[in-house]
Length: 55
Length: 344
Image (cartoon, rainbow over all chains, first blue to last red; front, side, top):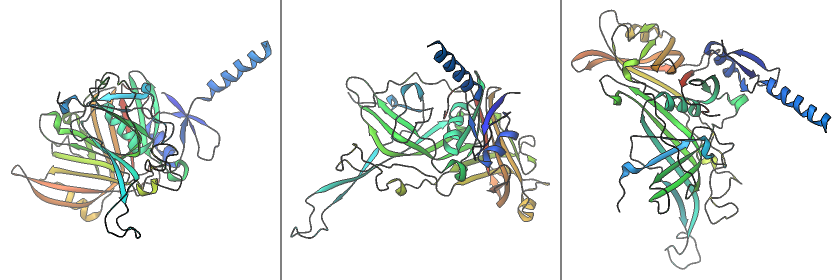
């Protein structure tokens, strides 16, 4: 089952949830919104850290 | 040489603008065909000084550009692509999932508390013989969907499944557009014959009773509120160029659903009206497994059910009253298509 990352309206902890209407619609109604997977940001930060170390 | 209206090309943002004043880049624009000949003509509103004192007469001596308006209609045969676009831009909130060729857009109306009341914006381009000596080449920047309406009828042709989209612009124009439109997207039609329909627990397709169906959404955009102190001008900083809107916000939104079905012994519509029975209404139209639209009205009752006739057969025309469900809201749409990046 495919999953997407969602974040709550109060800027709480993002969660990875199943991308099905039964799951997504109640979240959207509550004000949750989709975000990019956080892994990508972490990977980018690691790359940046490596670059700083080498420089 | 005279231009034929069939030369008209339209393109608009399949991706959303970053804000109301920043036009879509060409990479986020697609070209689609449409049916209606009406153009999205910009309207310049003016005032004059006829009523002002001090001139010695009642005639105008000066005309002042006050504001700009743009609105338009896109009438199309319903396809999975335009359906996904209309749901995403019309309802306002979207989650994209899936990969090529099956992108899925799960759409709901904005939650004003957390999402605000501004819908995603797009640019709308009209061109006739673009290039060196165009007949028409303009782009309306900062447009938002005012409403969409899908109508499904009986009969063999494409016209039995159509969508009508109305939109309003900020008034900001770019002429020439500076956009070279991509080739028209090959759309996957959602024909009437593919309909699945269950309303209040009744499957109207299995029973072969459905005659026609109309459902839609209207944002009732707050048009005048778009002109606020500081909303800006057609030419930035030029107060003589006419004001433009700096925002397009939802008003009191409305969902609508009505249908006509054959009426026979055992039909439940009148009893459902009398008892104010509530249930979901689930409408599905499909091209293939990757191109599909499912719209769910989360809670409906019947506000009217009138027995009449259609082509000599007894039918019942039903108007539904969409209601808000505390868990799932009033309406949701799951639109699947081959097109990536809609409202992203």
